[in-house]
Length: 361
Image (cartoon, rainbow, N blue to C red):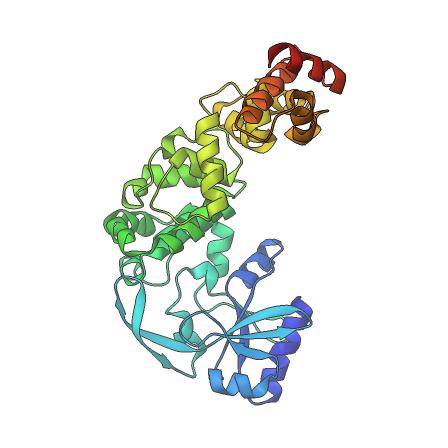
């Protein structure tokens, strides 16, 4: 990936433009972390980038980001710019294209995200981001109060980087987070969730959750029950504990959250609970409660049946046996025989089941 990125930078240079890899990829490269996102900054305008590369298209992102695809790798390319007068603590009123890398870097969030790499792989570090990497500290570019008031989402990004990199927050960053935390209410739930998901799925998630609680960001973010999250490694499990109806979820996620919240009140080793809700939901619920997931898995695997299709009898068999047309009675019979088979009071053999049905129905 780096090789392709450097080739792309050389194409810019060969055509008379300046271009650099910037931000997360360079940061992670220095830290020895594998990264798949490559951001490039250039003095070429979006129009010039589109003319330069056939495989370029305007990104769905705001403010003229161009995406270029090379050998299956996506590069997000943004023109050097100044951002003027942020509105709603999130978006600038105006952007102005410039021809100055240093000035472009001054608009960015954290020093560790301002380190650049040129077409020769040489590091350019105007704002001492590399020093902060070595010190393992999150520090804003310029005044932290200004950075967070411009774009309140940067508060969550600070927590996210401190979490994923296991870095400390600079003293001014901490003070400015506490001063500006209420501005998080101006950030959309979608944007909040993207950052929160990255915090919750980090290998260091407990640190991130602790920071959110310590700086009382849970209130501004409308996140209940953060202090009740203990043992779950599952993202959907964490959101189940939070149990918020304000954040966006797909219909599948909503169903999982509802089921987990039901099952967390049940016995997750019980055959009927395992049968009705499946291994994943019970495992997540068990994780939340600190149960032995290995035992839950064993109990699930030991079930006589895992679904109705495992029964050694069909609806047609039952109707033929009783000489009846389809009806609600079939549901009652199924529930009865599933219960008996799960608790090993009835063998899952067609003749045995038929004998039971005839004797009772």
